Image (tube, rainbow, N blue to C red):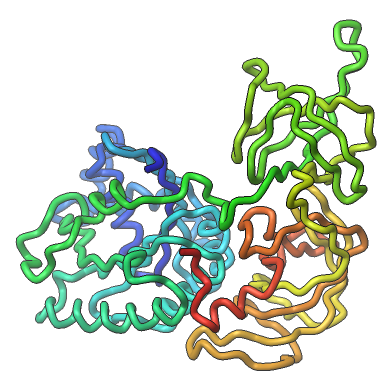
Length: 433
């Protein structure tokens, strides 16, 4: 079991997400005493009997009220059993792009629903996006369980509907955990609540501490080396007159001195001579590690190239189908000329046909839509000016993802997945076993 869990939160506005995140920080003693004192004083000033823990994470509330876009906020906390990196995403429907960003590297997502409202359209949208992204584990936190009369019946109804939804989207029952909570009072967050005798499962923190996860957050299948070159390092100093290193982060697999690699898209082969880091040389480096590779041959390698294992190196592609979540106010139409960023390579791209648009409420598709609107999901075709060395997203999350960018201002327009991820969602096998 990994000692680090990357998780994200998702949910609709007013589901109590800020309070739940604040409760997690408070119950794991991950906030300073003066922060607690400040929250307590602010809560008393508002006439509250208990501290409003949402204030621990709502420091940017003024910016929200001014209408400024809020990006993903990363929180860090730990228990004696595990450390956590939490991507806290906004709940407004217009911020679906932030949910995509936060969940793209998550091993688990905590999805909140208000016990009084149950599974709503935003819940279904979030679940569909998470399935498309291949998030392995899911927690449904049925919050405000203290505010409903027949809590047992409400929780059972919500769990039944949610299980039907997640099963349709491809999650196995053992990968989804429903927990009734009251983030305000702490019920079933860190301590088991006497107010929910109908529930005999783990608390939220118990589940987060014990859930088995794959340490390689990007991996869907075992693949060889994938190393996107970020910088070419040539100091040209008297001490290092001939030094030429290729810096970047290993996206998949591992590498050792003596390994044969292929440079993509050129196809030239060479061998790794050594692995440099700021702390010295390494005998082996695994996915997620930032390193500088020194090659035995003086081959042509540039920023944006990919060094890969020759055994299963992806074939560079110039035209491909992809699944995208459109994140811009301006609609996407066939023929749009954009920029595509894959790994460290950015190239010009043309959007071809819009093949089908996915309806996350009915889990069905509409063929050949005329355009794609904000937050809509679709399968499209893309042609790029320079080939990219991409895996299918179902093979590897990191090397199978890309961004579409507005060439005029650099804004991100879409998050894309190489291949037809919609087919897997529609078949109900989108989430890896």
